[in-house]
Length: 142
Image (cartoon, rainbow, N blue to C red; front, side, top):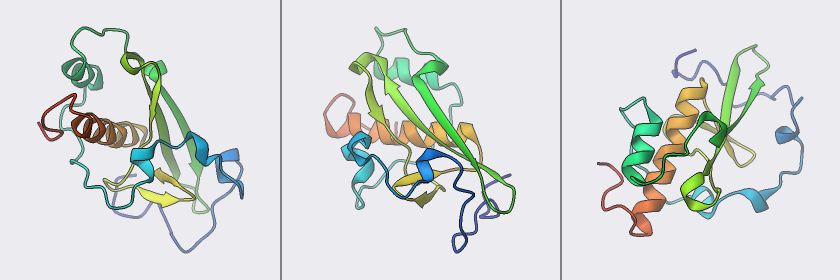
């Protein structure tokens, strides 16, 4: 589904069949950048080739593949499938990034999106912001 809010009914309960929706989450695996509530993130990247974006961040690093993403999906009570992901940055020895904002709905510490690609792009917004804050890149919006 497209993001118009129809994937989610925030007042309702989720199916809960995945471990990520248990009452306890392992918050130790959440990156610091994902936990901050006041962070202003750049918009979703226009470029759909995330490998190209990654190579702009780390020009000498070419070991980027879809295996860097660990995607989870869940079916809502209305039958819509939603997605979240974790990105392990190979150039940073597997540093983890989690999607945030950009149209996702937060539930139990994770942001969920109507499609896998949007979840991945939202993760790249978090990656870009973190790299900017650490001085690796100059502008997360560029």
